[in-house]
Length: 231
Ligand SMILES: [Zn+2]
Image 1 (tube, rainbow, N blue to C red):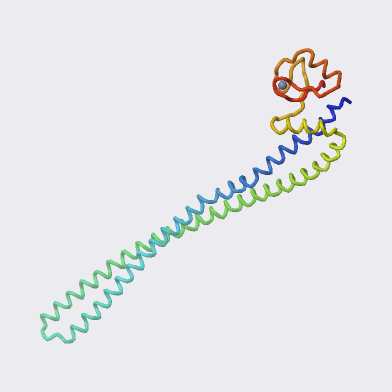
Image 2: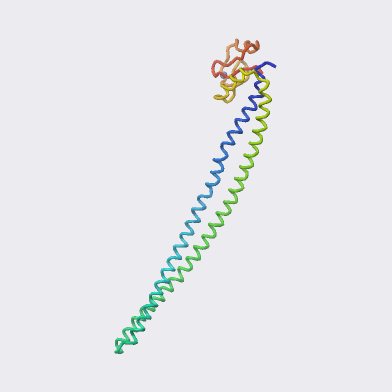
C-alpha cells in the first residue's frame, strides 16, 4: 500500500467523527426548540386563567354591592322606626323597595356571570389538558434526543480509540499536512478520477498522475490543495 493510502482509514474516521460531533453540538439547541413548543400552550393557559379570574372578580364586586344594599336597607328600617308621620314612613318604604329591586337586578346579573365563570372554567380545563399532552410529547422527544446523544457519545469514544490505533501507522509529517487540509476542507484526501481531482473537479496535468505513481512525496491538487491518490 502506498504511504498516502494509510490516511484513508483515518480520513474515514475523522469525517464520521466530525459529523457526529456536529450532531452532538446541535442537540442542546434542538432540546431548547422542543421546550419552546410549550410556550404557546403555557400562554394560552395563563390567558384562560386570567379570563376566569376576571369573571370571578365581577361576581365578587356584585356580591359586595348586594351586601351594601342590604346594609342600606337595615339602615332605612332603623330610621323608619323613629319616623313620626305616615307620609315619611311610606316614602321610606319606596326607598327600600328601590334598593330591593336593585338587589334583584344584581342577583340576576350574578346568575349570568356564574354561567360565564363556568364556561371560563371549562376553557381553563381544556387548555390545561392541551398543555399536559404537549408536555408529554415534548418529554418523549427530549428523551429521544438524550438517548441519541448518549449513543453518539459512546460511538465517538469508540472511534477515538480506533483513531489512536490507526494513527500509529501514519508518519507524523504526513499527518500534520493532512490535518491542516482537513481543517478547512470536507476531505483532505481525494481520488484522481479520469485525470480529474474529485475534490474540486478540475483537470490535472498528466505529470501529477505520474508523480503520484512514483510515490516519492505527497502530491496535492494545484487548484484546491487536497492530497491526491490513485484509487
Ligand atoms: Zn482539486
